[in-house]
Image: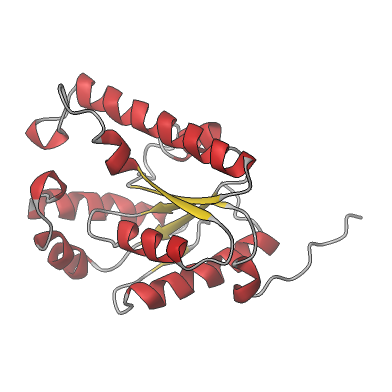
Length: 199
């Protein structure tokens, strides 16, 4: 019988090299939490933002807000592969990484399956899912192409609710600031290191 892994407390998770995928709707706080978490770890950690990588395309950028099409879908796929390559490279050099993306539970092959192929089987997915009112309020504070209509946000949030019952860890950060959410993320990751979620 295999020996169970040693227990890891929340502080111990800060010393482990790992790859985290932070999932959630627009306005969940993924980018803010990912940056804060990466900045404060005791081991070297990179934040890889899918949106930032997608926006590397300047001329010919396909903005889904002007209509989802084959071109915008292709640019998202390319950005995800690029992020995955970067994550694997960081990990191979002893640097942890946290990626953030709005992965939908009703598209598993494109979402989690793609990230697992790009980054590797050790990727730890965690869902940030605050209440709809909180997401709408945060989205209203955004500007540029990262601000979505209320209808789009509500639709995305509704689809994200499908993560409940998936077995993935979910953090409702409706009442948590960025620091408290990062602490909750550490606690979730400590548990995931001793008992990885099945996905």
